[in-house]
Image 1 (cartoon, rainbow, N blue to C red):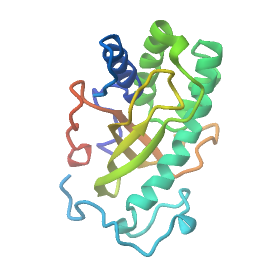
Image 2 (cartoon, rainbow, N blue to C red):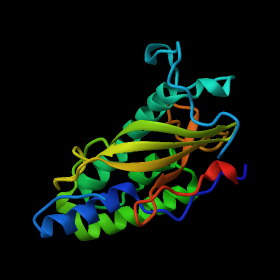
Image 3 (cartoon, rainbow, N blue to C red):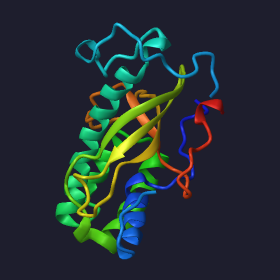
Length: 209
């Protein structure tokens, strides 16, 4: 699949902490493809109770905000297990990296590891072992092998800094055999993209590639 790779973005958590640290030092807190389906419809009879993140809908129109929200929530519950290990041990323990490998494609795992190294080295005392909550704002594009969404990330459980919610962008692709060798991922999806451009702008649509 052409989209099974990461983009040169910056970790949402890292950018949030960096920008917040800069703003706090000044006395204030701040943060800061075009397929036939377009933006997924928000009017659907599917409810969160009926959504199973372990099943990819046959109809791409059903990969809407409600469905993606359930998937994203499940993925970041797994991510939180790695965060807990990183924060409590202040090291990149193999167990934590193995958890990341269950939800991110290899290139994105490497990028996440890099930013965790920076965070643990520069501001480990500011990090908390919580869940990074992501509220799906838009399903920007959906194809058979790519889902591109805009989320609002809430950092309140993962940093002691006064970091307000900010926009972030996620790319999802269907999980294939071998993507999750430890069986940690409760969904049928992997993240190949998790971040923003350095200036905070929306990245190029990866589903166009």
